[in-house]
Image (cartoon, rainbow, N blue to C red; front, side):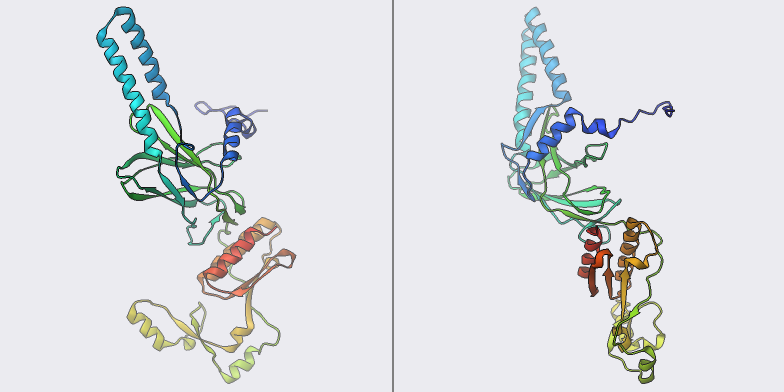
Length: 352
């Protein structure tokens, strides 16, 4: 039994009909013909122009005025008709020139956590830069991202900017990736209706550089698993008997206060950094934190990857040194830092 449609709610069209519509097919054909490039210069060959709805309405008005002027022999009617027609023709030339010669470049995508990629089911911001080399300002230029085939809507909200003369303007757009992996950027539309809104001047752009989409981190993930001892390492009892220290490291939650180097702590507080360091025992070098997919305790594969992603971000935040073990015997050697975090996240995104 079909669910009745509430009053005021529009019926939803299945995605399959939207994908098979002639407009969607034409859009896919046009996108397939566009070469991919991280930089684009708008020229006579890649800028398109058609009358807008206001332009078609103005054309109908001009036809009515012309017919009336001919029937009643009104000189003022002729004057008004040709004046409006000349204004529309001039706006076509000015609007086309507003885009022609504009240069666009793609900046690196960056997630909200500062990594060189995006997380699934989270906004993925993309930064673009518009360059204007001419001596006049470019007015009312809009940019929008076309969504994937699975989306019911074909474009996101437009971002409108003015590009100053012999200058540049930054524009940020975002889309919502649904699946992890290495994906291409969605196509970009550049649009202007300047100056009168009677003509729609637009161009299409397909960026070349792909973007990594990492698994969505699990919300309220459990704490990190305990570090496991390596073969050949000294036991903690042997270490405690000699109380030897190899050096210093960043303070970690749970470290004994007697291991804190208070002299360095006083210096850091004096400089305003508020960073604590602890003495590093030798057994710490023989205990490695391995984030193993078998330790997640979950059955669903995607849920496992989400928990590992949360653990990777947690280990980075705590300044830990860790390695990653995935299914199929794939490993990422222990390490730390932003580059190591990026390698682990990319391995999780590409995990089959």
